[in-house]
Length: 360
Figure 1 (cartoon, rainbow, N blue to C red):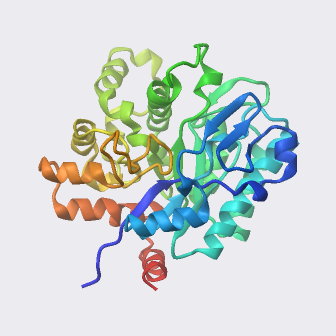
Figure 2 (cartoon, rainbow, N blue to C red):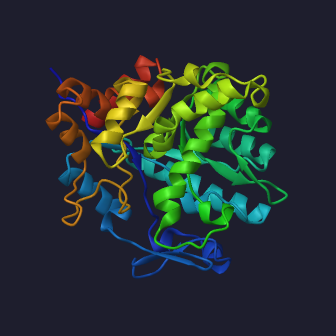
């Protein structure tokens, strides 16, 4: 009997400073200082809080924590919002080429995603084709919201973006929806990490609201969409959305009822909700089959080793076992089967090919 794998469905990776093109530093788009202590953008600086932000150290961290494989998403700082068109295209192309190189050189350890900018639809479609057909990437990373070509903020699931999802459906892609840039969207002072602790959850909830209202889970049957951070507000806000839909049908003409998306086989959420009460609600609403392991490493809001937080990778599922919220079998499915189902759907051959790579 083969052992069950531990696959992390939500991970990030920084390029080493010398891997980042000089134009990105010159234009203050994004760079890492030579001491590997900070990641930077114009007017923004964030500490590198763990050595596993970088590839070699990430591999050691994964070995130490018995993580067999990880899905590496794009960096949120490289969604490209607010950049000039040519700068945005070059920055995103660098991110996608970097991720493709990581996947190609370490296929047993990493499945990597690619990013596009929905505000420039033709370029986005071209980059999707390049990433899938030339680079072999099969996870499309999208922000919950993006800035369009005239400076307005839009939800990624606005119907004007259907062409993106039509192409994703053709390629049968896994899709990751991740929040960022809340401080640019909302006119509040950025204090006490409010945009990461509060508004990111609202951004995910807003994106899920429109994904389900537009019935995308049925219109595009070949894509499988995962909402980051457990789509936490989406779970607790369901009743309010249902009451609003039923109470004001004039505001939802032609839309799909929120109930129809609950527990849908092609909608996934990761485990990164930080407490077992939230996890229990997600399991009750969506079913354990629709939840996959997501550590969001190496960020401090991820499941990292931390004495102050008494945390370690996989802690929340261990607590769920202790509190009898899930069984050992369900825990194993969340670590392996559900991640594979999100990545490949019903393509059993692709699942077995990845398993073979991991175990080789």
